Image (cartoon, rainbow, N blue to C red; front, side, top):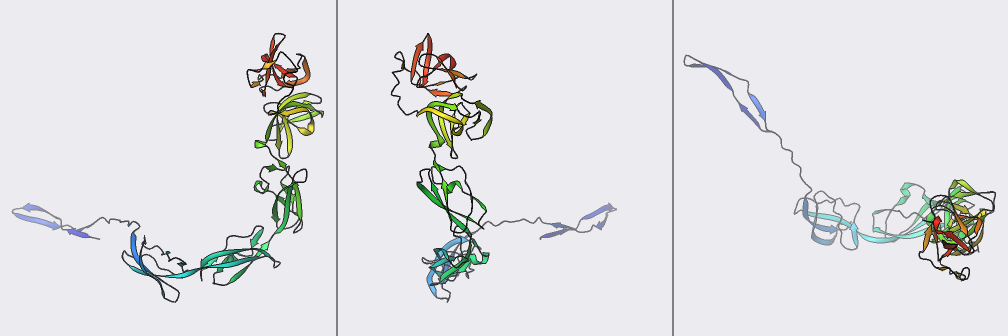
Length: 379
């Protein structure tokens, strides 16, 4: 720290004489300037040596950050765990200890002495290697056994604890096998849940929960093939067969409304959700197949061979779909213009149509075989 000292004189001029006093010296400290040195890139000349000090590769120029460990190595070698060399000042010469890259076989053996799995790992001869590819359904006995010291020509048997495992075979209703997986747990009798990734692609099941059985047992799970996005467009009628049929939303959650027995409803979509089949009866409402009777349905891609026989005055529709009004239910009429008892369409629901006609002065659109809706009921 730089110091500067000055003597300050003060005085009074009296009869040609200066009477003065010496004021206590004042010390001024120069401000200390803090300097931050950025990471410095340097070039060092590195010679690679083996564990016995023999030269593996002559000196070559390498760049790095001053103070950073030197990890580069010639082809077929890697930095030895024992090497502590770091990049020094620009132009320094450094010696780095390297070791030969090797491959060794690792066997994972369970608590009963049975081979669970094997793998080949690569690393530097004499270096430590941390194992990360633990076989499915196994745990390490302790953390220390995850690390092995690699020695050329050595084969390793690593102890692991294998959990109880069951094989799960997925079958469709007709007993066709469509996939397999394994489930694991600490002991038989505990609950294990299948993950979505374990289910065969394009299939679903009514329940993913299983009870783990004794080691080596096989379990069978029935799955159902899902349609694209789970919904199949159809045209048809469903009839309620139970005293009160609960309505459900598209996620399978029960709603507050119900439909009465023997009532009939137009449907335009079928959905398979978690293995349960539903039929849509309004924009947001669905009935379970177990609560209804499907009196007739066809996919929207099917051709109606009787499309022109029911009414000779009908002609091709001027629209591809109609949507019911958002107020009340829309009455359905037969080919003769007679209202069909207990058959109505839900409010604000879209329906495919292929024919239109004018009957008794009223324009109507066909939404299914022998089923028509008045133009006054649509938007």
